Length: 373
Ligand code: COA
Image (cartoon, rainbow, N blue to C red; front, side, top):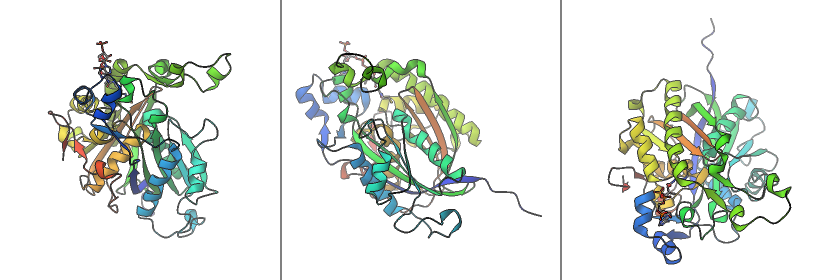
């Protein structure tokens, strides 16, 4: 008699992050904005962020993270069958880039990233879900794999918020940083360590005005007149976003846990979108998760959008904070509004190199603020 059929799944087998070298401290921002290191740290937990250099685009960051993730990936040699088209030089057959800051509004950034990684010819698409982009991208990549459309996917979350945030807007300029994080997913089975699953995904377009760049799309382009400076930049209603981020991430994380049949106590590491330390702390509190199980490095990189979860994972893995077998819960929230969560049991992975010397020490949320773990 044939045994039970194993459920196909996308399995994590490579991870890396990269942030541009230029560090922008709170003190540097305070020199030209009416703000202070103390205000920023108290309200957000952020101490510094990294900015891309002028002319450096999201694809530049994505290529750096993608190259590192591919080099670090634990990939068995292609064995024919679904991996028949793969070679050592072409180790994946799809590239997904999650970003809010594509190089151009047309075409997508992923084909260029694939090309620059020597992967010309593979499937390549962007996922646009603002700060939820990485979790949505994971679901898209898992779908490509379980549908048989790809056997290995390079998924990159990359954003250069410094290119869309008005540098004179003190409410937003303090929050965001630039970065990229990448994972390699391969076809495998749901009962393997590294299998990503039990997604909870959602959206509420009625609240689109809470986070937006008003100009640049078809809504504005079909109207007469030039867009204003405010319309060309990123706008966010911080207080309302703060409340939604907490309630949506908490509910989504709970839904994913329920689907996985995990209790909150089963979670070894909660890796939320690194929005802001107060949001992370509130979500952990609402979930009833001990704060030391909540991974954060928002202090050293700020909110890096779609890059934040893979960057936090890469730095936590590089610092040996996450061990093989640990149960990990990911949850994100972003403009749209969008939210999403998923779970995985951590696989044995080659240790990624830290995304930047400054980001090498992952920090955990604590009552007294961020601290090195
Ligand atoms: N430095 C000093 N003062 C600032 C400031 C800054 N960088 N930014 C805003 N302020 C001022 C405001 O002008 C306001 O002044 P007023 O009382 O004289 O009007 C005061 O601080 C309080 O502003 P408020 O917006 O109520 O502050 P807040 O406590 O809500 O904190 C955020 C602002 C943006 C930090 C907070 O709303 C937040 O974290 N929101 C979520 C943002 C986020 O993480 N988004 C990503 C989700 S994906």
